[in-house]
Length: 308
Image (cartoon, rainbow, N blue to C red; front, side, top):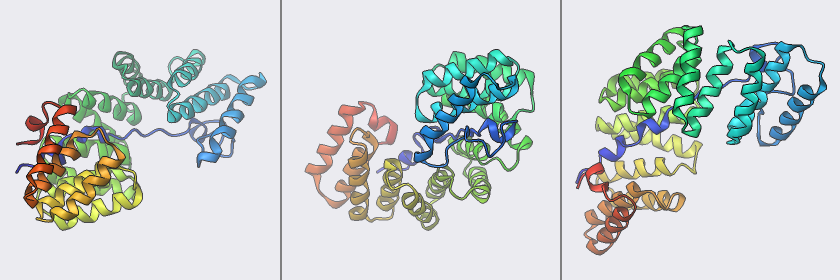
């Protein structure tokens, strides 16, 4: 019963993009209302504040660039990508050589699945400033998301070298190490990322998966429990913890987690397949077969992906 592949599959989906408010780094200042919102209730006021500044006609070019960039970042976080791209474009009309804005627009293109435009922006940002850690981290994400780990790893390594306390780059490099089977280095990167930012759940999830692959189930469960406490709507975390329970010989606990994972994401074939394995461990052939059949309906290659 091969379930460890389910602890590896999809690791690169956890790549972490670091985006900061342009206002905090440039002229608008950290006290400007046109900045990254601190909570859901701050989103609309922040957009209105940026819009008011943009439409005032009184901003010098550098501050106008920042207002457009900050509003674009907020739109990007909201998933309003067309608005985000428009605002980033306006910022780049003011200064086409602003590598931070190029990097941010490239990252938004990547989230849209437009990798050609993403790479054009990110390559230009790195060409203009080879020491821009944010651009290198973002370009590494694009390479990794396309399965090109050979190019992704040097970008993440350089990003970490330039910004050793960057939890995003550390987590992303750890994900690539994990995808290459280098769990020792992956765990080291995840641990460093968590020292900088204990709330970065993707690093904790990745470390838990790496511990599980090394059969260190107590550490793995500790990390997965923390992830679920922090993000109780994370279907993937329940799936991974359930897999660990199966490997520990606790199918009843595993089924509870797989049920929760499936409730949160009914179209996740991994959780269905793994729940079938847990039922199989309990001797419930009918339920095991039903789950396996359902998983194959969603992903006909699930057995090849996760093991028969």
